[in-house]
Amino acid sequence: FSAVADTTGQSGRLVSTARMNRLLKVDDENRVTVEPGITFAELGAALAERGLALSNYASLPHITLAGAVMTSTHGSGIGNGILATQVSEYDMVDASGRVHTYTLSGEGADGTGDFYSGLVSLGAAGIVARMVLQAVPQFKVKQCPFPNVPASILLDDVESFFKLGYSVSAFTDWKSKDTLTGVWIKSLAKDDD
Image 1 (cartoon, rainbow, N blue to C red):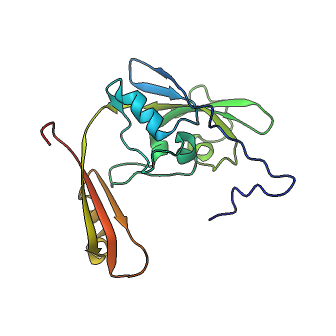
Image 2 (spheres, helix red, strand yellow):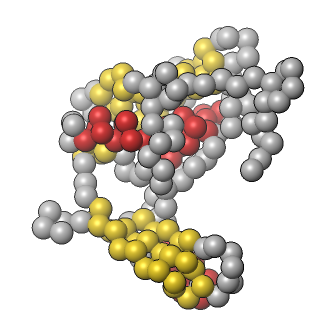
């Protein structure tokens, strides 16, 4: 749906990080070091074995962490930032092959660029080779789907709509401006839910 990643012609190149898909380390402060090609399903399963999770996930389990982060993909809910907000450090390989380490605090950065401008650059600034994210203790989410919801519920008060749960998603098929095809409200669940 976009020519941004069009690699046709003789100069087109596509770099895949699919085989760079390991969880490298989890430290005592629940910072998780991963390779860029790890999928949300792979990372979620590895974190669950340790009683951990990310505070927010992409909707699709098969997409890669770096791909989601570098395209500013978001989870949902007014209190959840884009996925890049969970990253505290990353290594990026530039076009010359040089590796740059960026930290959220700025400590140790080599002075080139800004933390988020490279991290959400769609790959234009380089290729992410390693990421460090902050994990949280594992938690349960209860999802309540509602089909065919009047769009006015969202449009009349957007902020209140997205405060309905920990994570709120609205879907449309664009056939009717008056009806959302679905709304998913996700709330933090108690152990007995």
